[in-house]
Amino acid sequence: MPYAELLTVFMFLSAFVGLLVSVILAFVNTVQRHASRLLSVSLFGVALFALTSALLINHAIFLVPHLFRVNMPLHYLVAPCAYLYVRAVLYQEVRFRRFDWLFFVPFGLHTLELLPFLLHSAAYKYHYLQLLLVDVAGVTKQQEGLLPAYYHPVLKFGLGTAYGLMQGRLLWRFGRRTPAAHRPENESLLRWLRVFTFLNLLLYPPVLLAMLLPLDGTYVTIFAVGALGSYLLVASTLLFFQPQILYGMRNPVTAAPAAVEVADEAAAAAIEPPTADKKEDLARAYSLSDERKQAYRARLEAHMQEQQPFLCKGYGIKDLGAETGIPPHHLSALINQEYAMNFSDFLNRYRVEYVKARLGRPEWRQLTLEGLALEAGFSNRTTFFRAFTKLTGCTPSEYLAQVASSH
Image (cartoon, rainbow, N blue to C red; front, side, top):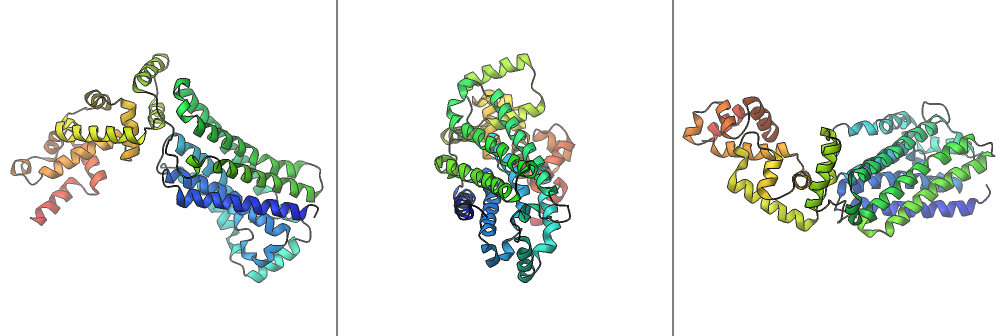
């Protein structure tokens, strides 16, 4: 194979840098664990491909035959994890959303598809590799699992391109909702996200072109492998030059000053009333500095304990914002990031704790469940029942029985 030594060194270098960055993101970066681990998995999938490619090119794969094809299912994690990473950074997510597991279905199916081969003995894989490597181009033509040759590369190209476009849409939507005057604090991080998205859009076309171009199979392999190794090396090197992202994003996407924010929000609402989804996205998009979080949290908790505003029925986030002097979107961001819940659950948590603290009092024992709900600020018995069960893991009646048995 022409340029075999040079390509081997290049792929080993790319793999080493990519694996190093993946380990740092997974185990060293503790500021945004959810986002950094998603990026780690995405880069690890490409790094393992680069390592396996290098071993195949210089035939060192015969020393570790069990490593062959382990990377194949991981290809289906690269694009979705990259997309979820960008979404997590922009919206300060600390966990997966309800239906995010659907993004990992192709990975699971391909793993099951390859499981019979992966469970074979080293001798079987050694013999398989001997036949496969008679022709270097055979590696790119091999059948992966149950589907015919080339089907999985086409699927990976389609999914990867779709996820790349979705990443771009996330950044476009975020840019639209963030006024230009508020972007300087976020520019370094946003620039990285744009470059990362652009690199992801360039990651899969070389594979498809390699299959379509009328070139010798060996040069097609060199082209495809070199392109993917270049992606990994560029992305990983860029992260090394941005330690605030690699080791911990302590200055995440931040919000605008309160006065300007309210004015912009009012202007936007006058043009187009925001939908419920847009309100949720906008609230998640706001992030606060550590100092402001601490100040807001102390003010918020003191107000909730001293004034007990949660006892008022129909109490909203705007009411709390007016009473504490904290802008509503800052409140939404604070509650989402610091307490990992929405405003409704935050308010109901105080109401449920209020009920639990008073259940032992004689005057409260005479109240019905509806009476308990109204006293604590719930609008009706059903809302109280659902909130209590969600936050305590048992119904009000079950909790009352536990209290009675403990006395």
